[in-house]
Image (cartoon, rainbow, N blue to C red; front, side):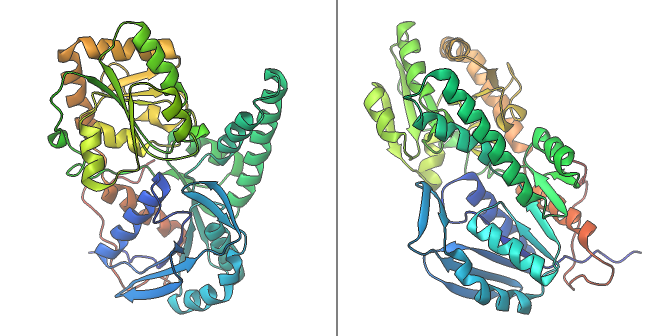
Length: 409
């Protein structure tokens, strides 16, 4: 019998960890996966204070940001002086002896990890989480709203192209790449000619569940959860509200969970919307379960954790045909894929009128979410790490394969 393969020693440098966003959620789940299995894992990320601690084979090094912060959003920032931590992290990294440095993007933490890996001759794996080029283009387009349409679009498109080229230069440093949807896997393989594999997301289906529903009134609730910012296209929710009420559906209400630069605009321009800010844990799970349909108008998301959370809660999702969320939705089965406000209105009104359709879609949405497991996601990632391991350089901790676990993208 062949001996079980051994788990590589992973140093993980992530953009976000404590924040409320998809990268942070994935990072926490990844660290938890490694810790539960006793895999050697060294997590490096920003925190409230600079401190290091070790629990068995699991280590954490949190690094406090400086005051030289470039704020991008309430939960997104770039520390211009983060490299001041270089020597302290280098010493800890040398003691840990990683086989692979895994970075989540060109953030201050990701850049630090990539520099250290290069100088210490450690192979790099990188996962793509955010379409920074689309993020930059939408932000700039909003700021240039005073310009005529065509010049504004031309500038935004040029910015998108340039930002993508710069971002790809960072990912070129990696020998192994991961991406959250098939479109991005294909793009990275084509542009960078690096082995690229699917790294989707999992879901806690015990927390996010239809059983959390507490609402019993007759109002039809349209929900959204996420960052309230331009790249999420959240102003469309105001347009949707006007169109739905114009169609005579006065009992429709909106529940918009999240925070960001667009929150005040939404408060001022929406008449029938509750916007409670950021919710966590059971409060968030109850908010999802009390929705009747989830509308996610983002054109830039790479996966859509919140879409999966809504579906696990038994809520059909309406998404656009751009980005990763469309890979979660089967139009007409567990939600709808739409491209215009008119199509969204039609889908919402259809679900509002037909309780039987809503019940069927809710059941199918829940069944879709049940197929997503964090353990399967990260089990596949660990199997791919083996491609970077020279013979005889693996740790002594067994890497247990799960029965039926596939490593195909």
